[in-house]
Image (cartoon, rainbow over all chains, first blue to last red; front, side):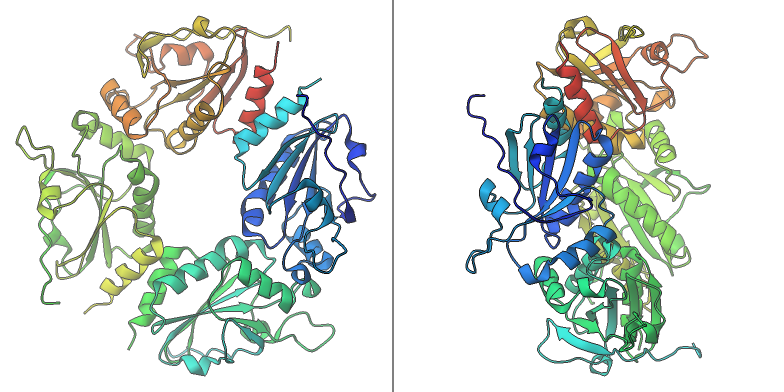
Length: 158
Length: 158
Length: 158
Length: 158
């Protein structure tokens, strides 16, 4: 366990579905399930986002905080904040969603949080433990049985 | 059959996935399967659009013409042409897609083709026979077995 | 069409879900959809039998006759008539089901109708036209869209 | 936690998929996931048995022992040992399966373990903790996310 690294802070342009800007520091003592997606990514829409909703419904919010991170690295003009808001409404997504901060460089399509974590695409599932350590980062779909077990393992850590 | 009505012409702002503007008149002698959708409508993304792809793959294009009609009646700013283009790319939609013409009236969110057909929402499936008559208009999802049978019935008409 | 062959008659040990023994001759003028299955074949239970139920529900019984054919070619002692009856009850199968006649030879596990058609396994879908000609024989699962279209094509033949 | 009760011992007629008869006592120190089913129960075949396979694949067998319990309470003649063996083979079930002991009374269709636990039907999921206490008994299908979380919670108990 000596190799655990702190989860990089989220670099967020805008928060949706929450009244206040959030920070990983706000969630210390809780497990964070970060579902990184793009609203026009088929695997996200069909599998990852529905899974995020199930996690949000099942676990006590004092144990697990579900956060959506909209990390747009392609088709930027197609996935704007106004489109994302409609998406969240239509797909009935109720947990907080952060819009990943664009790189700020013309030639760099990768937003800042995506780059800080070294993600390769979407969907990506990231689990952060109660002490803020990065415990899982996986691109693609992880089956529910695994996600349920891994979240509970983190919940039950001291 | 005395009551059959001609299918109203499509009123289209922009055509995608085709080099030339299309008209129902172009499809005389063929059956037209018109899949009316909004890119942020969950039932469209999960059920109707995949069905349109299956219809497009199964039937000979000399028999059945598959057309997507993007009829935005809510969240207009969220479902623009640039967003739709990215959606078509990401969901690998290869058949022609028409963007329904906005009403042109500030207070009227219903686009023109949607209004001409009196549609109640999306998804809607519309079948037009070889003579241009409107033969089916149904909101919601129609099972594949029914769609396959109905299309073949229209194909086999004189 | 010169090569069409008459569908071999069913060789049946017992009929279930019907008061009288049936024969393909009884169905002249109708299209026959024969779903060949084994009650312990996973692909049959998960895909083919539910599809048979959908076909039975959708089409007019004056057009399409749905018949289940239980062709046991393995685990014979496990798939007896008493087990099949319970299976039909539990899975709410309402169309007629024929038990394929065992070969009668100790060393031959293939029942007689299965052999007459040269089937390679289960599930197999067989379509027979209004004149009694064999028009389709396919092992494995055929998608609903195809089945709906093929049945309607046969219905619409003179 | 004062109300925890010891899980009643399994009363087994025959064990399959294991060389030796097993007992709950053999699993002390491990969590037991008992999937109670009937081979002709649609909900079992479609949902519960596949879930049992996923649990068996995911968890370390030093942590979680998966047991199938075939508790026949209807159609007894249809779900015999020989039929069950073929079912296990065809559905590729690899974990140990116990055949629940018949009541022994002519008028009582409920097998002994089913009665001891007071089960109302199949499928039923039973979880037993490392000390042998009954921690969950639920009829019907429990979603994977919940099962994964509950199993891990039991694994992480002292």
